[in-house]
Length: 482
Length: 92
Image (cartoon, rainbow over all chains, first blue to last red; front, side, top):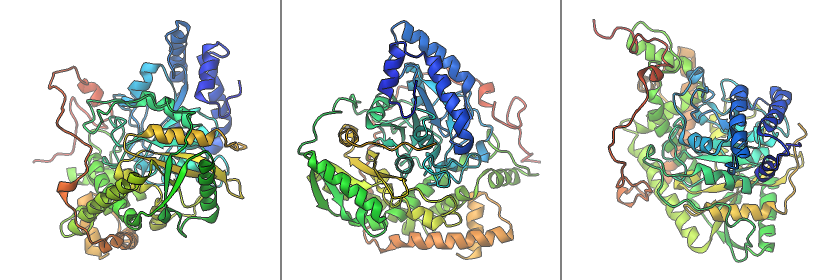
């Protein structure tokens, strides 16, 4: 069976009609992982033995007619989502040998469906970065050009799906970490509304911004995965009780009359011409299908980067204070308790993680709290207000996902400011807790994918999935030659 | 950023840097803070009564005793254990 960019519904059909068994399907993906991943470096841990056990169990369900949408479907999981008995490293020396004693709620949900775990994918350390180059282990490359970054922080998941080393994967998104790597690798990825998916078992970066979501070959596949991932969870106080719809229900329906707002600040000079043109062309194509384009403005975007980094790093500094080398994690040396903790953290964390802890503690410390952290919270209120105003006249907001296509490995090394500024198109979505989906809308002259983002109202993933699906039905993706 | 400020942040963060690395990180933090300073132009202040927070703590789960993790499972990732976590002596 050809597994290159195969969609879930085609895999489902092949499994249900006995064209292929769950075990054979697993073998197909492991063959490709073995052939390609030495160059791509998308996985940190490959769970071959466990996968075949899960596939055998899935096959029993299929044979007995008890299979559901994801039974026997192989899935890769970002390495910051806890998997009982399988290493979860967050791409950090700090958690190099950490084996979680429990499953994240999303993993429990997938297990109930009989999914098959292919392995754990590489990421920026503790999800802090947009290139996958801050990983302590596997510095993933872009399947369209191995000299370029795959994006991040869910770069391993996006690269694995793009290179057909998994039909779909889980990522997490704190400031664009699902959407931007999906854009760089030419695949589809959705960040659900904050609270839609349980964060229990997701290693925390910034708790008010983090959200788990799928990366896949289409909006339809993302919708299928969301149907399983979303649930209220008593283990997560921020988990929503809003009813979970069937996310596939509006796929294929016409988009006549749908109003799409395009804030002019997202199309400013910082955005590469080829990216801007591809997104504008996609907007015209949606207009031709009956959507209405609405010009608008979002003035607070100019403050979005500091607002995001101050909030995210303040929360990260607090969340990462738990890593002291005592109960789990890298253990350093020291004659005293204080020395032991400091040595563990100094040697366990990478440079970018340490920078963000320092920034977070700066923003929270006496004398700076009002000027930085509280000001960032004021900006958060303003950003939410501006989004609400935009949604008075529009159903969806369209922006580029990133100001550039995937850049060369090393281009942003040693320049944290440049790295932070590159997040401009994605961070406001997390600050406002909105859902947003990236889908590919073109390729630049060098053949690198260009992504656009469709941002929805809170808990309205269905509309952005419908719109992304409508676009994908007439867009022909170019596959990487890997 | 002044050296004493970055040294204070290292104390708060429980991180060590040698002199050379401290100078480098101080320079990087100066650039980062300069980027963050852009927020000072924004002239509205935070109003905690207007928080559009989606989190509701009104409906909490019932306080029911349930089986939980065994001590062995919870300690499986610790580097040094002897029926409990072992750390350097804190009190003489």
